[in-house]
Amino acid sequence: MTGRASRMKLERDIQPPVSERGPASKKIVVAYGFWIFLLSDFVLFSGFFAAYAVQSTATAGGPSGHDLFDLKLVAVETALLLLSSFACGMAGVAMMVRNERWFQTAMAVTGLLGAGFLAIELHEFIKLTGEGAGPQRSAFLSAFFALVGCHGLHVTLGLVWLTTMMAQIRAKRFRDDIERRIACFMLFWHALDIIWVALFTTVYLLGSAL
View 1 (tube, one colour):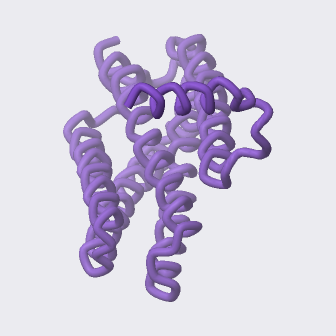
View 2: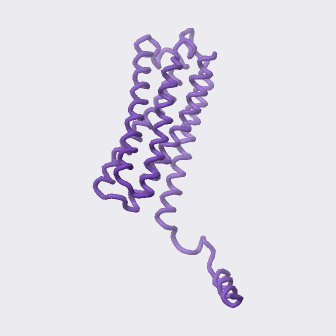
View 3: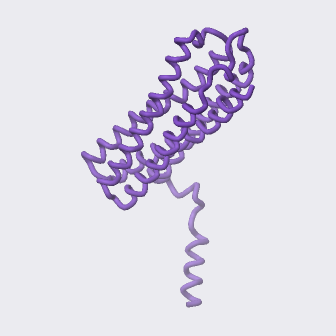
C-alpha cells in the first residue's frame, strides 16, 4: 500500500496545473458563459431598480403606488411565479432520472403558471393605462413600467425557451447537449423568481406603504 500511495502521489505531483491541461469541457464552458450572462442580467436589473428608487416619489402630482397597486392581485401573481419555480425544479428532478412523461408534465405546469403570471401583469398594465396612469404620466410611472415590463419581457422569453426545450426532448430525448440547455433554462427561471421577490418587496410592498 505504501508503494502504491507513493506512486499516486508522484503522479499527482507531476501533473501540470489546471490552467495548462488544455481546453475545458463543453459542460464547464457552457456553465461559465451562462453564469456571466446571468450576472450581466442582474447588473441590468440593478440599473432599473436604481432608476425606480430615484423616481419613486416623482409623481408630478399624479397617483402614487399607494393609490394604484392592488396587493391582493399582486400576491396571486407572486404565488403563480413561485409555484412555477417549484414545478421547474420538479422538471429538473425528472430530467435527472430521465423520465420524459413527468418532465413534460412539470414543464407544462411551469409554462401554464408563468403564462398566468403574465396575464395578470398584462391586466394590470391595461388597467393602469386605462385609468390615465400610463408611463407618460410621471417619472414614477415611467420607472415602474420599465422595471416591471423588463421582468415581464424576460418571463415571456423564458416561456418561449421552455417550449423549445419541451419540443427538443420530445424529438431527441435526453441528450447531453439538451440537458445542458435545460439546466441553463432552469437557472434563468429561478433567477427571475429572485428578481421578482426583490421587485415585489421594493415596488409593491414599499410603494403601497408610501
